[in-house]
Amino acid sequence: MSIFMELRCEDSCEEHAEGGYVYQDGTPRMERCWSYDNSGCGVHAGDTQKSGLLGIKELFDDAKKCGWIRMPHGWICPYCAEQRKRKGGASCAA
Image 1: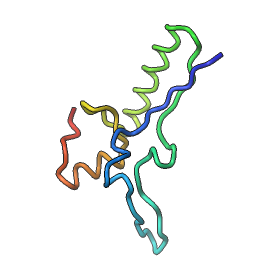
Image 2: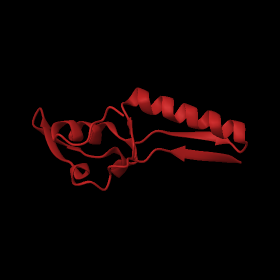
Image 3: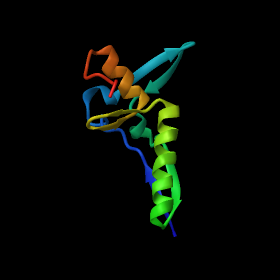
Image 4: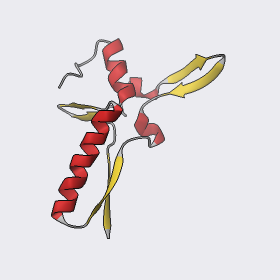
């Protein structure tokens, strides 16, 4: 048996998470919270405590490499982190 762990963006319920269309070379592309598209980081781990802890470490390491930010209320995706910076929201420096 294995355990699947995935990060979900804690800002997915915020208004800015809904995103919108961005035009690049005349082509519309939707940009929004990564959790809306199930684009977060995820890992499989074994069913032992040691494997679970190693899986969490791998998950957090991958998230940091992909641009996820850990804040006091939880992890937020790169899109939502950028929206917080643009709108002068809570700092992403935690």
